Image (cartoon, rainbow, N blue to C red; front, side, top):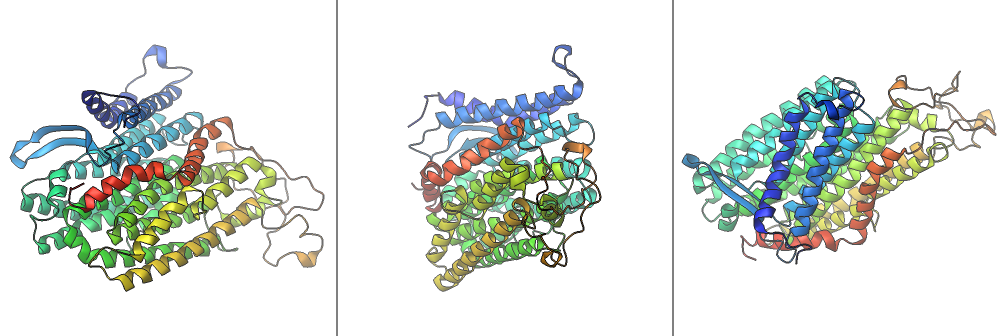
Length: 568
């Protein structure tokens, strides 16, 4: 069934357009704007250009999704297969199925929302021309990663995103941005070198780099020792990008230093490239190698779940001087641990849960980073102790809509039933309860118990964040007597706290203790452009939570075929 009937040639064009258009748009962004399109100034023109290009790509992705045959989501559709390097049998092979289509749509949506946000709130730093061009190159590389069906093209697309993200952090980031950018590029490049060796090993030993042919062969043309070596090499590169504990240490620094848009794209789509590689390449191409390493992958995954949650609890406690952006970054380590646990089960239930958790994490954590960026703009800081003291009578009272949306995103992140975060975690735990044949059931049930404990820790730190940032460190009645004031409470500020927003609030405000009967200074609540940017993410979080069959109906047939060695 298709929503609208689109010819195969048009579907091919749409997919090629989605991949190539952002790259062409990046080149155009660096050229002088035509006189009739300059608007008030060249900066506005190039930011509008970014919205136009990403909007066109999003529309094309939606049309592609409506023309997708939903009755056969396990079949590769909109395929293009052209010989590129005949000597190595490398082909320009594009196509989508029920696994890649949701990730394609998520990437197109998040990039468009980032471009729209930047149009109304331009990035602070060098010329917006370079910023817009880098975001478009980043989008092209990410979309290509989810659309290509050749191992070498996958590697090229996988690497294509590194340089744009490096410059987004290094040029437009905050404190310690250069050190964070170097750490990001070194970790990911070293992991990619090892991954390339594994991809070459598979291609040369099997005689083809075609991912569809390799998945159909299901490892029968590769010896077990070759599969084990390939999974180890490729898995290291994918694990760095995911990121898997203990290869995660670049992520908190990168997120803390990155501009708001950089954090949204890094969490929302770049991390998904690593887990997508596990599902698209390692599970079908080297099943014996994956079966060997699956218990270790699951063990690292659950350690990451608990470690990420404990790190967030440490950052959230009073007096820790924890950064809210850094806390959300560590939460990603835990959430991606659930994705890896689902993949390690090698079952349809677990892998479907991993793919669902991928999309849910992109929606919810993308929204969280948008909100944290807005809070930082208003207060001039993301330091939790400062925010908790500065909110006084509560963010709910000073910017109620912003506070309510932050609380919504937090409870979605902790996996509240009825929201998107719940289904991915539940399905991965169910998959761990009954892993694939040949895997130790007692070991995976232990991993399931540890993962379930991690959900409790996640709820703990998210509720602490909501209490401190949205409700404030003190109630309005906690200052009635000096004895009721905590010993480590901040001193009252000598001057009223600035209520402005944006770049003008460059100096972090001093925490102010509310006095009984005093009027709480108001902050700018959600602006129109912010509502336009954040509403789609919140709405999709609710839709995916209430109607998970929309996504699972796409992924499940494709996963069943993938795990069965290309047989439906």
